[in-house]
Image 1: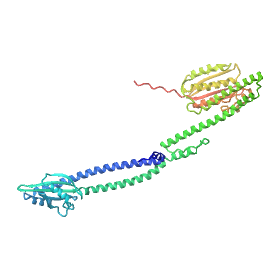
Image 2 (image 1 turned 30 degrees about the horizontal axis):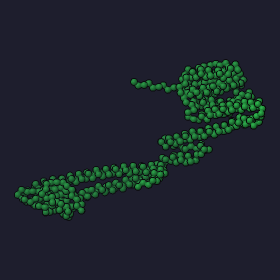
Image 3 (image 1 turned 90 degrees about the vertical axis):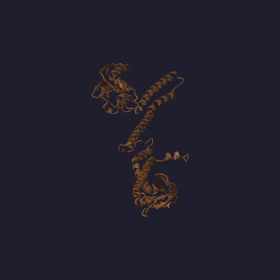
Length: 479
């Protein structure tokens, strides 16, 4: 009877034990079914062979009796019994009027007359016709063939009997079955040992997976599981390693976001708090000035939080959602939106008339961020040029201004978070230092990059360089 805790104990078994148990159970079932089917088939064939042998012996007896002539029944039986040679597992006996009269020669090992129950059953069958039957006694089970003998002019009823001890014939088969069972048991033992070792080797990466998962903590996600081979376990290992990569990236992004928020929001909060503490509530002018300053800092914090949220989403799989995008139309839309950002001479140098797979909203956001930077660092009335081009398998979107330019020492770091060029500080230009980092993240999300060339006092050119992923052509419907 299954106890209530049996499912729990089964669940606590290792994968190795479960697989080994299932393998042994299926193998044992297969061997048992195959052995039992073979045994039953051979048993049936043994019975058929016994019947064939008995039938041949009776046929030989009849031929011998026919050659014996027309003497008395007892003489015909005696002569025929002496000349008929039964098979090694057969015995013979002759009855006259229900009484055993002649027995097989002493050279015949199977002595039917030594089983009284068999003799009684055969005596009762005297007078009946030829038949093939089975008789079971306390000593054995016999397969019996009988042939009646009658001679014209002799009223006596003769009966020739030949019988096989069925157990002797089946003994060899049962011995073979026992040998098969021992061999099958030995094979199961060998399979258990070899299978245990092989399954342990195959599942070794799972042990590494478990131990690695135990060692991983929130502050240490750098460890990875060694990958070997190309089977399902190796694919599982690669999948888990990829999951660990995503987790590490996610935790890193979260820590960076917390660090950035703590670093950047502390200043405006300190400013707001300090002014509120020093504010003279009785002075209307001081209250108005403090209110204006607080609202300005709140707006700055709102913009900073929005930028931080965008950067926090850059590691998510759905940060960029590609869709068919017409680059030429995108160029026109960005130009229309750029006109509202400042009093500049807006130009389009080139316009790529191609359609690619890209996230239109994100590209618009990145392109307008570059336009906004161009406006900040150039003088009113100066030209700002936009353009797009398709070169080989790349798409390039650019913004060129004739403004202050970027110092060479800042070119390698302007795409980092919270980094602002020294020219921006000198000119008193406001900004969080996150705009170009967002542009770089959007370009990277499309599998591209952002390049910049700049000469101080002459101007700067920012180029978003993306792979031109073609729009899939829909399959035509088959009529």
